[in-house]
Structures are given as structure tokens and as C-alpha cells.
Length: 324
Image (tube, rainbow, N blue to C red; front, side):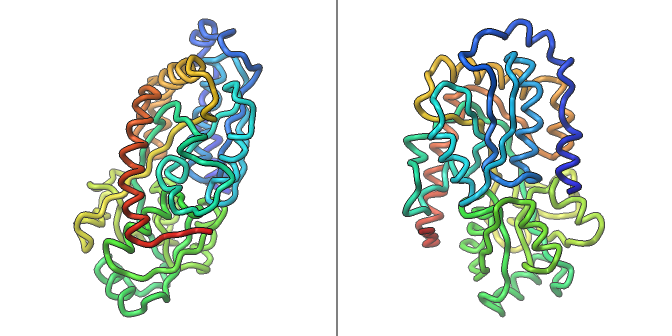
């Protein structure tokens, strides 16, 4: 798939980090890292993981293997991480599903609040509402009028229950007071395939994923989920400005581990990852996929997750979202 090939092309030559590797080897108790992506290959989580994998390998002196384990909105992969040895060898590219939106699930094989520990904030990225061109709308106001005239008739796909763009859509439904049907998939890539084929009528998607289809007129953009216009889609206004005042949804991503991983390993991982995320060599890669790199400490990640958990728990409760 085009997006997956693009992701692989963004891998950073290990030679850029050879100096860091020489200073950092020998400090971890594991021979290699397994970086679990709890979604199918080809989505934004997969891309972020593959951008990080090679420079982290060079910085740590350990091989990093990316392991895609999709299912249950990202919770199959997360449960696998929790069940792995708590030695710091198993990492996860965590999303809102693990960091803030888990209250929608009545039963999970693990407790995200108790069993998952954030290591570092990786990046954040706004999304875009896109529709299939067969839908007779060319603006968000026209879409809102159509959706309100046909409650329950329009379906949107997502990367799964509790995924970042599922929550963006549910916040949209709640704020705009429209009735849309959710169709969950095992990742962003299959959700996009469903939309392109006409199986669904719309979706909220990361801008970089949707951009090639927008440029080829296979999808029509109606509004971005962030508070301002995005340079990649300068003609597409924020949703909050064209029909849904107060709407804003900006997904963020962390590297997380099982909560039993010792604090000194978490701090070491955070320091190595922070250097990778902020490195001048990685900046063009972040820009190429339209995300804002974050970095920082484990404490920074924990604070943001706490704020976002409180926010999204209110949305989930108010909208009555439950997954059994």
C-alpha cells in the first residue's frame, strides 16, 4: 500500500546516530526491544513507530523490532504488552484508546489506568473530515444539513473503538448533534480502503493519510479537526469555524510500557527517545507526515494523559458510548 511504502521510506539512516549509540550501549537489561503497534500496518501509529525504530536502535545499542498486533481498537496489542516481561524490552505506540478513552469499555483483559505507564509524548496531529465524492455535499454546512435530514443513514469508519479518530467523530456527533453510524476496522488503513470503495460515506482521518486521496479527488475534505488551518490543506477550514463552534480534536501519541517496568529504565528510555524525537535529523520526517513532535519526560506524558482522560471521559459519558 502506498502509505506503508511511504512510511518505510521515512526510516532514518542509522549512521546519523552512530555517535549517540556509542555513548548509550550497555545500559539496558534486554538484548532487543519489541515495539508493539496495536493497529494494522499502514496507519499513523505504524508510521510513527517506524520513524522511531531505527534511531532508537542506534541510540540504545539494541535492535528494535516493530510488531503489529491489531484488534479491539488497539487493546489486543496493549494486553500483549501488559502480559510481557516487565523488563523494559516491550514498548507500545499508545494512542487515546490506551491513554484516555478506555472508559467506554465495560470489559478489558487489563486495566489501562493501572497496567500501562507512559514513557514519553511522541507527537500530536490534527485530522480531517473527508467524504466519498458520491456524497452530494461540498461544504461542512451542506454535510450537516444532509446528515440531519437522514439520521442514522451515513456511516463512518475508524481504526477501532476508542481510537483517536473514532473519538474525533464521536465528539463531532455530540457537538454537532448529528446521528452517524460507526463502523470499526482493525486500523486506519482498512478504514480508508472501505471509504475509498464506498463501503462507508465518511471518516475522520489523519491529514497525511488522507492527503493523497484528496489530491487525486478520490475523497473530498470538509474540515480539519484542529483549531487552525493546516499547511497541507490550506483551503480547508477548521470544523469549529464552519458549522460546529467549539469543536476541537487533536490526537496525541505516546510510547508506553507495562506499569511494572522499573522507574530507572523508564527514565533511560525517555531520555533516549527525547533525543531521537527532538533530533534535527528527525524533524523533516515529522514535517513530512504533518505531525508536531513533542518529547519531554515521563512526568510530562502522565500529566497530559490525566488531563485528556478527564476530558474524554466526560465526552464518553455524555454521549453514552459503551463497548461490551
